[in-house]
Image 1: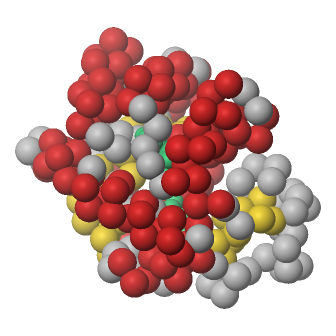
Image 2: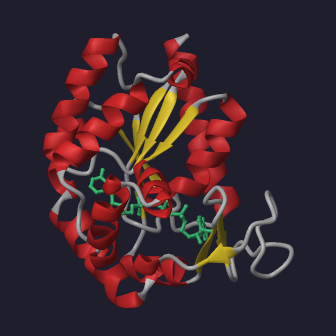
Image 3: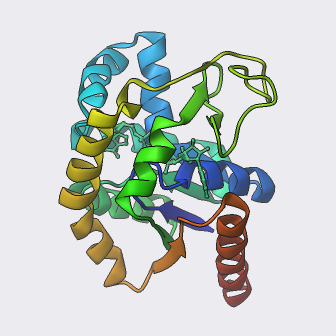
Length: 221
Ligand code: ADP
Ligand code: AMP
């Protein structure tokens, strides 16, 4: 299966994508994680992206399209992939179609994570990620066993610059309210959208999305 997870920042896309990719042997492609890794490494792309991300703006389409084109060429995507955070604009969605045609692949489904804005603020302000591999926690909903330390790899947890309340609101407005509508419409026209109640507790979201994916897998077989 080849999936795109859509939803506002903080809806729980990364949490579910990491779990599902691990369980089903799919590639989890998070453009936010890729940009943060580039930023930590201090590459020219990372330095350019760092300032844009800190403002809650979108990184230019040509940069993102180049990044995904390269990533989709890697062998681990052949068993299926989950795109988490891409495409975020119509130009990115159209470019993705071209790339998929080139490599002979098709999209299976586009789950959309529905959630009210007020819930997002709490999720993002309480989110902590690890330095080594960007494993995701929440100080109340999903705390690590030892405060401030990643359960999976022992690295230190930090709060993202763009998870401050002012930037969180800007990201919601600019990235979800202003930019995402045409992308949702694009996939809705092709009958690929399925809605997930992302405001539910994590285990319930997991059950709902697993049922959707199992059904789609069964239909494809
Ligand atoms: P996204 O990738 O959509 O930006 P994340 O997966 O990083 O969102 O989740 C945002 C925050 O909310 C994290 O701190 C995560 O631990 C927490 N979280 C994820 N899913 C749920 C849920 N269903 N209920 C409560 N908190 C959640
Ligand atoms: P995320 O980790 O998905 O919340 O993404 C963090 C930040 O990376 C976003 O706020 C954007 O600045 C940038 N970003 C990630 N993916 C994209 C994309 N597909 N297009 C443009 N900017 C992106």
